Amino acid sequence: MKPHRGTLILVLGILSLVVCAPLGIAAWIMGSGDLKQMDAGTMDPGGRSNTQAGKICGIIGTILLIIGVCIGALFFMIGLAAALAQHHG
Image (cartoon, helix red, strand yellow):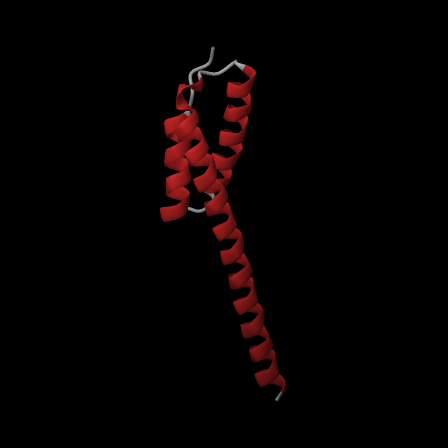
């Protein structure tokens, strides 16, 4: 039986919320994979709660990253439109 990586996944999930949002993607993917292995009985289920919490933090971090990228793109487009309007006007 493989050892769990619950603590690592939890740390990645928390870091995705606080410091580096792309780590949320890694926490989400790793957490999903590890939970499947725990359900299949091939991984130690002792870290299930940490793994679930890390996966949830990773999902939230990823959603916040997507929202941030969309807002950044929106501001970029508004700025570009304003610059073009000023140039033509």
